[in-house]
Length: 207
Ligand code: MN3
Image (cartoon, rainbow, N blue to C red; front, side, top):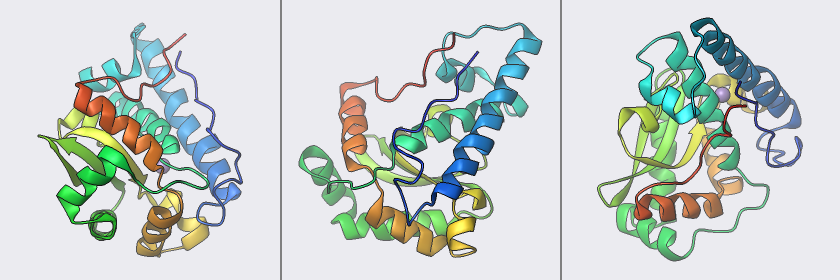
């Protein structure tokens, strides 16, 4: 059984960009439903996997992949936000400057990627072939299965992530998210893991 990981902050800690009401639905209903459905599917198959990452990697397209990947993507996403994040520094700042010119250049590419994703999906900052890159994914798509890179930071652009607070203004949500919530300390730890050739965020092991 996979658990629903707790949020790493209070439900109202990300206001006003992400309200407590949004987080209560997003974590308590949407994320929980993915985890519950995943556990039901694994139980039906009689499988006891050793990690969620292994389930995501092995599942082909379909219901198991969708629920496993969404369980992982959301757990990762919660860590990508912080109430009062520090600006990027050190290796991360250098990698951002090398790929995008500066932090504003990354913001432009980030907003373009998230706003340009047609329908539901995610906007990922990944490490690929020695450089940072922005890539979109559709629905439950995730770089840990697609091979598009090592995940550094992500923003959920499904409507359930922002509609209660920003209505149809996805671009406004992305701008406010980048300026106010993007967790650069977490991104820096992911980048260090990527450069070391592995590790980084792992979903809690099943029990
Ligand atoms: Mn979501």
